[in-house]
Image (tube, rainbow, N blue to C red; front, side, top):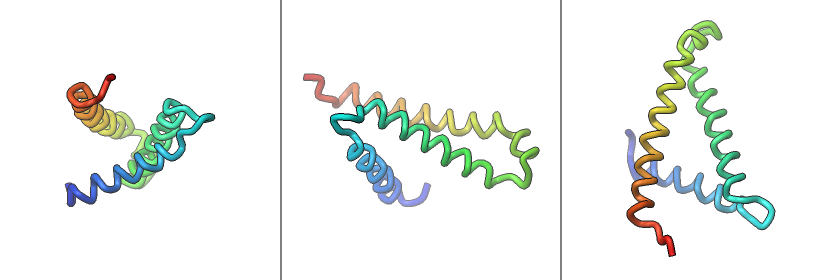
Length: 90
């Protein structure tokens, strides 16, 4: 990974954008759904750039999906564990 500080800064900017979209008409769940949709769309584009043809991409579709699913699962588990330990449930 490149500079971790820059990595976290970019992630924080995405979170700030998501937080700014929450209001009396838009719930955190709705923002989360939009956020996940956008990330999925971006990652599909990112993966497609690695192939020379639709046929090549189709042949490797499951491999690409498994990569993103595995990475997301690791990141989600890390943050859920952090919230189990540190979230103020009161």
